[in-house]
Every structure is written in structure tokens, then in C-alpha cells.
Image (cartoon, rainbow, N blue to C red; front, side):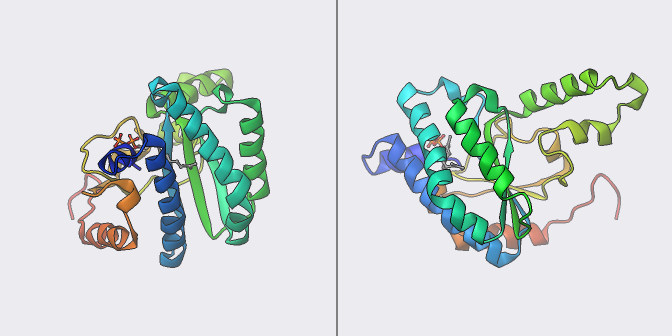
Length: 219
Ligand code: FPP
């Protein structure tokens, strides 16, 4: 969801106003995904690197997550959204941790759409965490294969993403789903995230449908 800051700057607004506009947009895109029959959506909301941003912005992003849970959860639950968290919760406040865990628990039996929220997430940190868990569970070296590593990632039993969309024209992975993205298709939208509307989403999906996915094989 890149470009919130630049969207705000263009309008002479503080960066947090951009994140708020981005959150509004999230609501619209979520609805569009349900309408379009998308079954799993993963949002990169806060990276392990984002702690280095100004304190007020970090605090504001924590507050946004809290507000979304406080105000949107009943509606999300009603729409059949299953909320999951990807990342390390231990660095965020106990109060917010509890809210996230409650939201996950409350929606665990919903199946309309799985919404992964990557918050305090980093692809490298995720792989390190998976390796630590594999060692902790005493798996011998011979048992370690792709399926086992995948199982210990935050995404667990979920399939790999088919399409990764990055907004605001940037051509970077930025530590997102490094393992899972091995054969994902990428789409770079030229617009800032708050302007990424249903039309832009459909454009991404249409182009995705035209891609020739060979997964390293010959057709
Ligand atoms: C990237 O734009 C955006 C973020 C780091 C934050 C995204 C978070 C939200 C939209 C909040 C809502 C999410 C949830 C799930 C509560 P940027 O700030 O890097 O933009 P810039 O590159 O233009 O500065």
C-alpha cells in the first residue's frame, strides 16, 4: 500500500492524513475483492523497518490498526472476513496484541475472504522465525524441505500468492513475502495507494489473466 505519504504531501497534508486516506481505500478494495471472488488478500501494513520512521507516524499507524479493529471488526465479521496476522506481535503494546488476537479468534471460522494483515512483518524476519521454530521442534536436517519451511512461515498452510500488487510505481520487493513470492506475478500500479480504486484493481487482474505462468517449465 505504497504512496500514502506522497499522496498527503501533494495535498499539503501531514503524512498521517495519507495513511488515513489509505485506510479508507482499504475498505473499498476489500469490498471489491469480496465482490470479485478473491479468496485471500494480504496487506503489507507495517514492516519491521517501519519502526525507524518518526515516532508520531509509528504511533499513528498503531492507532490506525487499533481503530480499524475497534470500528470495523463487526462489519468485517458480518461480511465473512477471516482476519489473520502475519508478523511479530511481541513488539507492539499488550493492549493492541490482545485486540489483534481477539479479532483473529472471533473471525477464525469465516470463509468469504482471508485477510492477512502483515504488521511488524518482514520477509527475512519471517524466514529466521521459521528456522528457529524448525530447530525448536527438533526436526533433523534430512526432514527439512520446502513444504516444511512453508509450514513454519507466518502464512502456514496458505497457498503462495498468485499476484503481488505494489502501488505508486516503485519497482522493489521491500522485504515482502520473500519466500512465498517465488513464482508470484507482479503488477506495479502507477497511482498512490489512496487512489488505487476498483478500476485499477480490475486492470491488475486483467493483466494477470494474460500472463503466461510457466513456473520454470516449458509449455
Ligand atoms: C506505505 O506508504 C504505507 C505504509 C507504510 C502504511 C500502510 C498502512 C495503512 C494504509 C494503514 C491501514 C492498515 C491496516 C491494516 C490497519 P508510505 O508511507 O511509504 O508512502 P510514501 O512512500 O509516499 O512516503
